[in-house]
Length: 96
Image 1 (cartoon, rainbow, N blue to C red):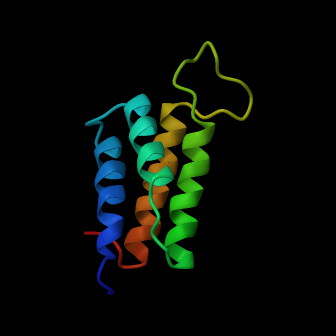
Image 2: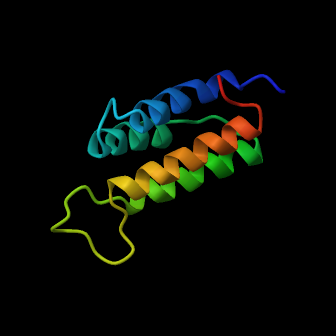
Image 3: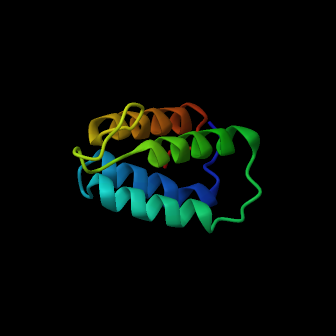
């Protein structure tokens, strides 16, 4: 398997922390958006597709059930998206 791109480590750690319930959805959203929006890495296409796909899921996440609309994700759905992203990274040999 290929070595993990070291620049993926902060993403993998953050996604893993959320999947392990070490942080909640709102905190994950805050940290992921900050990490992704300030990242100037020239990603390989497969890496970018995973990270950008997760960005879309985070963008659709709504922590407050009273504000959630059709198409918005709840915390469980965001967890599923995160687990899928980790599986894709693991499949590509990108998991620590």
